[in-house]
Image (cartoon, rainbow, N blue to C red; front, side, top):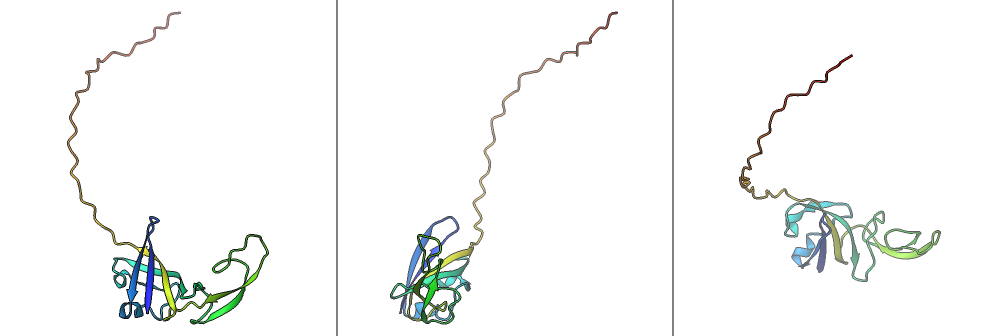
Length: 145
């Protein structure tokens, strides 16, 4: 068994890691929406499973229970994106449970550990002497009648 795990970060970057045999079998039984520790894939934080596909390219769809492949009448969403409104089509999709047949698992990072940035000491700014202000007495308006 061989699995590719695609990890999407919140900043838009992605990375792909490949697992074989015993490492890949640790994912069997997870469902779409399940969370797991990032240490399983070698990163810190936690991950949520958002999708995947089997060896023939059929996508996993939430709501199709088990690991079976079924033909559904789809109007839009995972597995079918029509160009026009109102078009429905029968498409084959995979269930929401990870089995030996799944070859790609899409994940999203839920919580990244807070990395403490090195604290930089601010450099003292050179003090500029302000020009001396001359105090002037407020002018009084005289009222002559």
